[in-house]
Length: 99
Image (tube, one colour):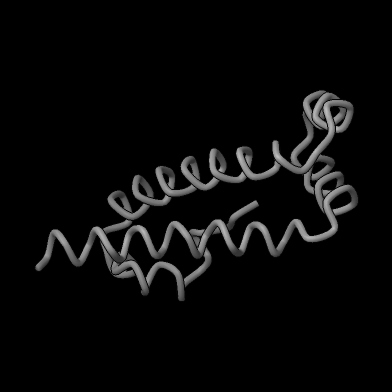
């Protein structure tokens, strides 16, 4: 859904594009987990209880993606916003750590 591993611009911006593959994979997994949680929080404010129940019953990833794109017209925009928020948070903390 987020395809962070293939988003070289995002990875370069947060400074992990050239990290060792094992380190990069762990960081990407953590970022995707955070993005998923943020996305769920955002979507919970948008969907009805009935829609949430429908979506909750979907087990296929492609079917879930289709459902989201069909039932939430600005879904891709929301995903982009969530990733931008995460990138900004990482950049702020990176600056604080690095100095």
